[in-house]
Image (cartoon, rainbow, N blue to C red; front, side, top):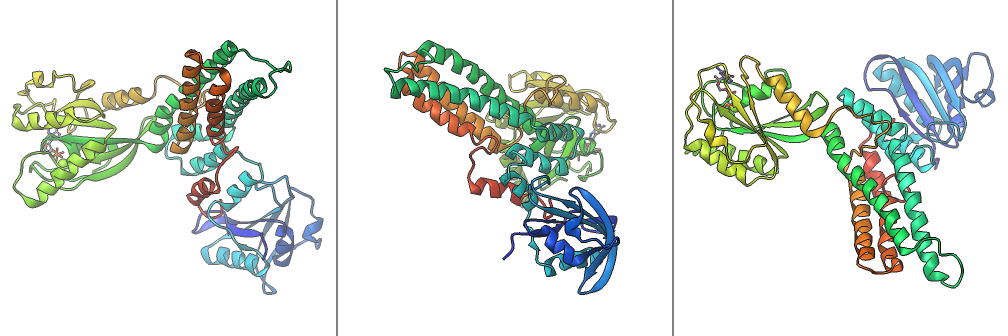
Length: 458
Ligand SMILES: Nc1nc2c(ncn2[C@@H]2O[C@H](COP(=O)(O)OP(=O)(O)O)[C@@H](O)[C@H]2O)c(=O)[nH]1
Ligand SMILES: [Mg+2]
């Protein structure tokens, strides 16, 4: 069995060029069997990081010609010997070139295996490897700049810095315990407390940065809710920028929930349009209303629509009642501002809503203001992602949050007069949580989970 892997690294389909990547100890030996340089030299003689032109060969037949680039370990993406063969980009042709690599001794690469090897071989930290996935999947400018900053190591540096600081304290504390008679006591209990307060602040900042990272990367689960005919689907279509949902003047048009992801300025919304909430005897509509209520309970952000051209009634109260019991941020969106107003705005004076916006979904009035408002709820002002570490996924958040809990527990102990060596156990636990942030110490399971989401060839 060989550990040398091969895959097509470019997108599946027709294209000017496709790249087949081979990585592992035997990469150059594999490539030699299937690529014959036009200058007659052996591939093994080609200098590292050099490219040669030649024939691509499968079972003694020339199937294409192209460029072969050689990278020698450890100076490659994966840290292993890597060969990249660029051929013409056709589906059948690319598959044949890949087959030639398998016939020459390579095995198929798993999803994300090149990047996983780069991580395992220390070429990339875990957050840098995750950044590769973020770059490829980016759907907005904001995601792209965040991915680029992680790729350049902004999380890695912050994780290393905090880890080293905390490690110094932990070793200082335990030096005190293990060798009390020796003069190793670097830090008094007061000094330990002062130092961990600094770390607590930094971890808290990192934890709160997830609000931004999540809004930009994962998206805010946003539910549009309201009575039938208030213009929920019209608003969804405005925000998505196309006629995604059916809009009619018939109440109960939207019967099922409709989901769409949309980059709204700097943040992503996972938008959910729902069936209008009202008492109904129609069996299908009833199910729709139940789904709306379920979505409401899981929402992070609620856009509650009210129709300004209609008088307030019991159905509005029903919705307000439901909204009272959700934790989401709630914006009252007053629609149909183009029509004459009959709505009694005092029903909204109940502390449920953090903001009120007036729009006309039909005339496209107030939509930009609504977009700006939503952005400002999650991102305040300009952020330079290169200088400010913003964490972006649940894994990073869990590591930071656990570390913060332990640090706070140690702080409380020290403040209540417990000696530093007892608090030291919490600090040790904080250190091991922090070790997970950037893959310094991480389980095989977590690593596999990350790279399985990648495409094959990356
Ligand atoms: N005049 C006016 N009509 C609107 C506006 N927004 C939606 N409508 C109309 O209201 C009706 C219901 O709209 P729809 O988006 O289907 O409402 P939904 O039931 O809440 O999804 C349709 O006839 C829309 O054209 C608006 O801002 N102004
Ligand atoms: Mg609708």
